[in-house]
Length: 269
Image (tube, rainbow, N blue to C red; front, side, top):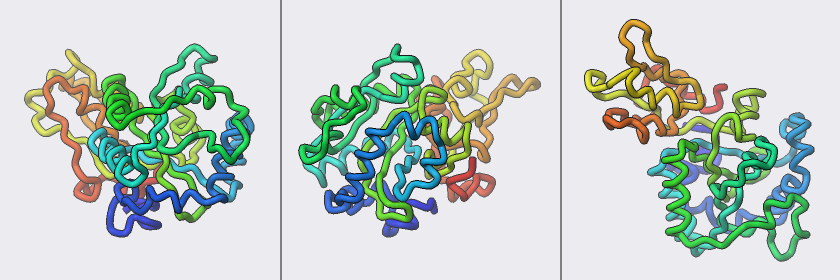
């Protein structure tokens, strides 16, 4: 079980537990953390020790598209569908302002009325969104090859408020970069699933290669001998994009606990 579920899963995956969507978790301390992080974005990008020494945490966990859509339904059920879509600040910054893609979703205003306006300009461009519009963003991101990353805010050790879904891609994602390049484990936890090829004989191998192309974690390698890919369960993060983009539909997401060779430590880098 992942560390987030241990803290406040109550027997469930933490981001599928309705209690973790309640506004009561969005206390003044947590709100202050969000505003401080938002208004000092560049500081935290340039000084990674700020993440490691902070008293608060913004933790992400990879999710499949099926679970991402369930998260949207829970956010609507608990918070009444108060969604906003945001231009992804990671992609904007890391591409030098070239990419402005509206693929991030919050279920609370990124600029609450009782807090100062953000200094980070993209947050001023948020738009209200319906539940159906948010689900379309999730589906669009999946087809685009962007990983679903459920975000939570809270003090170190919890409790955490499940607050958003980012759609990420290495290397244009700060969460993925912090995790894969700098070893900040809690910034991008593995999902609760591992991808497995169910019918290897139907795989077209190098003629397709989509599973390799869409895996940003380097978990898929094509054999020189067989010219077919193999998914390494010790490296798989369980995002499900290999399955989404497999034309033969022969990749299945299996619960991590059922795969003996998959790391049970969700924070392994």
